[in-house]
Every structure is written in structure tokens, then in C-alpha cells.
Length: 107
Image 1 (spheres, rainbow, N blue to C red):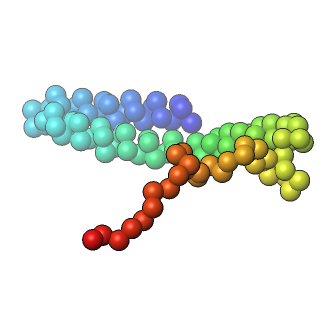
Image 2: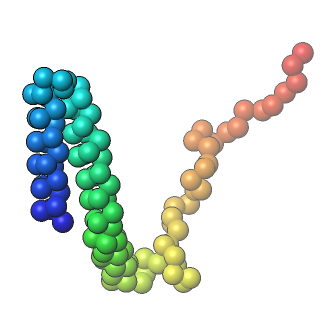
């Protein structure tokens, strides 16, 4: 795959150089030629051909996470298999001051 990318990049670079050095060509035309004939198609090709590798890496990461979860001690999990809840005496949304200001009507 990388041989194709390197070869096509070389070809489009030579096209851009020919465009820039031509008496009728411009540097802007050379940049556009290199971008549209070289970088854009090669970016798409690398993305498409790299999909199987990305999928394998994702599956390997998920398998490693599952293995780490399976090795985790059973005491750290609740009976239904989920993570154990916080064992603190207060709920996470408790008011810090302990007292709630009374609500009253405006005069």
C-alpha cells in the first residue's frame, strides 16, 4: 500500500513541478494540481485501505479491556456484575452546607 502512495505522490509532485516551471503555468496551479491529484486521492486511499487495521486495533483494545475486567476481583463488583456503588454515607448530590435556605414570599 505504501509503495502505491509513494509512487503516486512522486508522479503528482513531478506534475506540479512541470506546471510551476512551464512558461504558461503558475505556482498556484502547481499547488492545486498537487493537492487535487495527489494529496486528496491518496488520503482517501490510505483511509479506505487502513480500515481493516483500525478495526483489528479496536477489537484488540476491547479484548484487552474485557480481559482486565474479567481479572478484576469479584468483590469490587455488585452482584449483578456492574461496578460496586460508592460506599460513602452521603449521596453525591448532597448539599455541602447541610442546611437549605428557606423559601419565602416577597413583600
